[in-house]
Amino acid sequence: PDFRRAGKGNIRHRLDDIIMLMILARASKCVGRTEIIEFGRHNLNKFRKLGMLKNGIPSEATLCHMEHGIDDLALADRMQEFMKFFHQSLSKADGDKETICVDGKAERGTVKDNGRNPDIVSAYSHTEGPELGHGRIETRTYRVFDGLDIIADKEK
Image 1 (cartoon, helix red, strand yellow):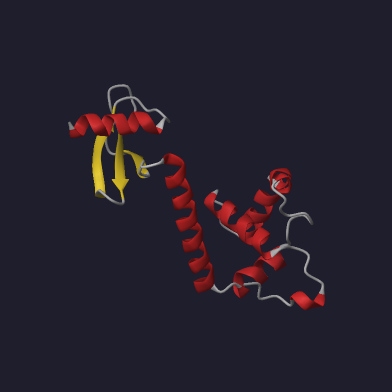
Image 2: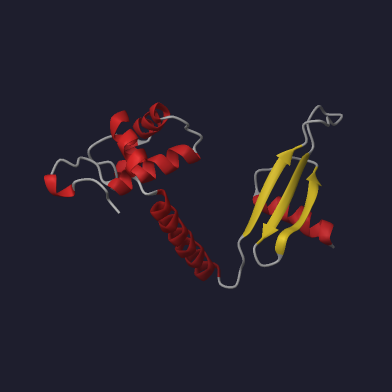
């Protein structure tokens, strides 16, 4: 819920726009308010195509005010509702398919003959348990399905 004095008519930015800016910037590894503002400036045209930030990027003072005024528990409840809705939408679009989380890491303590660190990929499923399997990847690829194929082969 918007905690600001909406009846005064001096609200320049929509609360949901500011929250989305902050979430997307933080997801993009922006740490402080200055980096969030720079992220917003860099992506302003993209935000405007989505109908957001019509009055530009909020100031650092506005971001500070938002961070201190937002009810954290209410935001957490809203994010949980959003994720449930998002997951249901994905489930309906994919039929009976399940969403599997895939995570890859490089083994930093080991170096192969070609000078690269070996990569390990793991797959997690909410319904099947915490870990479906894991395996070492010989050649790095950025396609998730290759990692899943390696895991599926390992399970056989």
